[in-house]
Image (cartoon, rainbow, N blue to C red):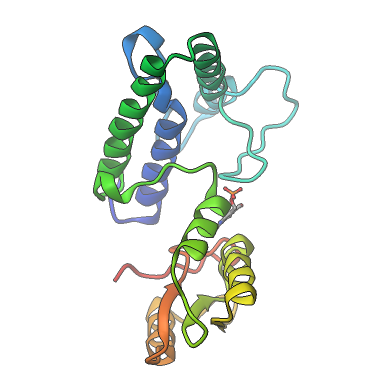
Length: 217
Ligand SMILES: Cc1ncc(COP(=O)(O)O)c(C=O)c1O
């Protein structure tokens, strides 16, 4: 079994959460989404064949990327098409209301996967949108300060830069060597940077530029 606190455990749960979110509208039996049992652990040739079979036929290469230009698995593409057909076929209030209930159920299931509560989960279209919702949703003022990990993905740091230019709050980046000495060094540098003006600290759990892992606090 995967250690729930390991990076692999976290990423596995996150992958499952993304798939659940994509299948959210299709949970009830009458819109049967089916289920996909993906091979786990180190993969042999057969395991990789199963993974390949999960992508649309005709693709000459498979981009295994967790975001951005990643092609969705076939089951997800099919589910999105079925859901689109369903809402376009029946636009009634009653049909749309079912999707609201399903969304809440899916939020609960995602929450269980990542050890959170359902009301802490927002289903959005991508990480860039999530970052911008947070940066745009906090009432920060001119003297307030936001601390950023310089190894955050640009969609995180640029979201804060844009809001800072609009609203006048200050953004300060905390820089590290590509591979910092230790997670403790990262924590110590952030702790030392906090002032009475600090309102937000935005850092990625795992940096996509260096693999730096910031420990949970
Ligand atoms: C760490 C990280 N954050 C955010 C993003 C942007 O993701 P999205 O395309 O979901 O907005 C990426 C894209 O690769 C990423 O690696």
